[in-house]
Image (cartoon, rainbow, N blue to C red):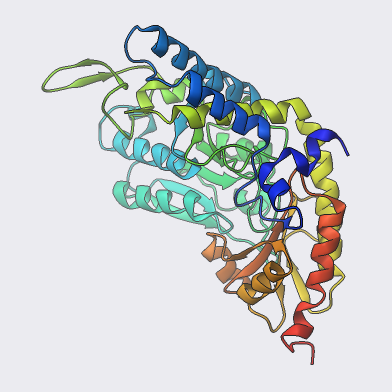
Length: 414
């Protein structure tokens, strides 16, 4: 295994040497390189950014904007197309609130929604890519429509094409499902949306950390992703938008740092990305976010994807080898991201998670912020194991061995 993949590079995993960490889809661990970048900035370059003309401000701004440049390069965007947000959820809300303001006549008339227009999502969406669109529909009189999933939690572009219509103005969907691990056919979805002049919003939270990503090449109009899922710190995420659309989108948060001119009665806003970054920015976190993008770029995202495809195959094999365990999502042999969610017959997901945790294996349990999907599958909760660059075949083997003991422990195998 390459040194970049070794768990020794990650302080949490060094400190918890016996623990198997299979919850990276929720939050990934940070390598020394990212923590060192954050610490060095906080110790030697920490100051306000974009405010004043001092040398300290200049150095801090250079670090802040340098991080933006690295992140933009990582996802195939221009620097002016990356907006720092609180997290990916915030980024999606910034889009929805901006469209709401455009619809209320506060600028960006080209982006306005009218009563009877349609917003399309899928039943598999994370709540962060559903609730903002519910609110937008209610504010504008638009109709929210959902692409149905099948008994495995999957949808196809044909399913989506059957829902998209002449009144569709926006299509919002996840690149990778955080429950099923299914990878969406992004280019095909974009083609369907463009056919009716609809905008596309991509939830890239589970793809930016794990797949080679070129947002411009994919053709999406907006996208959101988080630092803490790709080896970076919490408290910061990114909004991607095509430059011409960001300059049309009204800013959801207003105040200092966003404006060019202010009078008592009105304000004129700066071009993107500054028009969206009101107030004091999470500069140290941005530096860590940029360092994480640089670290992953150094590994090579093609290598990351190959490693995780191998881990995904092992996870599927481990789950399918245990009688009485039902896997959610793509079947064995189908392409998926490095995560697997499953149901253990006769044992609640929370009990499964506690049993595994007692044996030193960290997984995620619950509805994973995707209640409509779980409701469609007829289950209240699932258990999810997710891999990343530091996951090894030995980790998955330990998980499989422990999973095989669950039903007997709870007497569900009788």
